Image 1 (cartoon, rainbow, N blue to C red):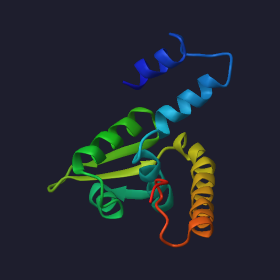
Image 2 (image 1 turned 180 degrees about the horizontal axis):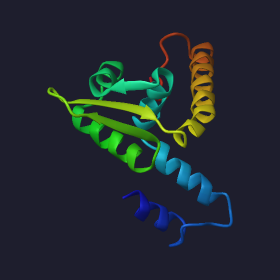
Image 3 (image 1 turned 180 degrees about the vertical axis):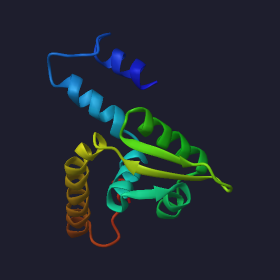
Length: 133
């Protein structure tokens, strides 16, 4: 799916002379509600089991968490380690390649906190994050 989106965005090529190629590639990994949150938690905790991720992100469904983890694994952002035991044990960790996202995610985290504070200063404690009251 990502590859077809990337090709479509970049006019059929995998590279682009402008910034759109790099931005599109980065957004392909980070787009969506859950991937940045999953990556952030794995970065902060180093190794997490599936059930620990579920506890940390209670609003995500099992199916969505599984899908997002598979996509991140495909892109070499996270590593999935399966232990041959009963019951099965699976751990997720960030790859060396995936660690390159840490400065970006930490900057997004800091900006997000500052933005929430800014909205509260503008609209008071009862503001609506989506921009409508």
